[in-house]
Amino acid sequence: MLIASGYADVRAIGDQVCAVKRFNFTTAVVVGLDDVGYQRRYCYEHQADARAALLAWDGRGHPSGPWIKCKGAGIDLLNPALC
Image (tube, rainbow, N blue to C red; front, side, top):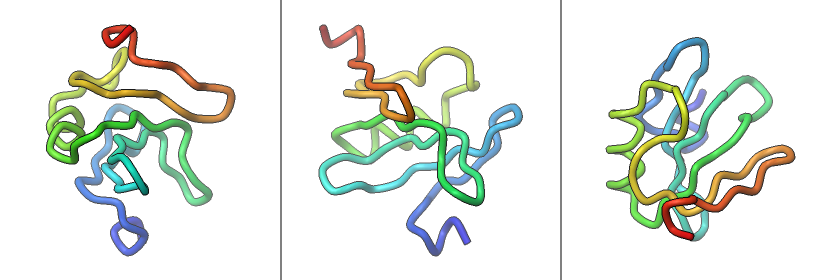
C-alpha cells in the first residue's frame, strides 16, 4: 500500500514507520507513517540526500543532511544549521 502511494525505502525506526516520498518541489523523509497519514516530514532539495539521511538515521533527534524544513501538525521548523 505505501509503495503504491509513492513511498520508497520504507523502514521501521524504533516504533515508527519511515520512508522517502517525492513532493512537488522537494523529497522528504516522512516519519510516523500509519493508515491515515504521517506525523512529520523533513524536506530535502535532492532525493539522494533524503535517501542517505533515512538510511543513516537512528530515529533520535533530526535526520542528518541538508534538510530544509520539518513540517507536520503544529510543526514548521527551519533547519537550524541553515539559519
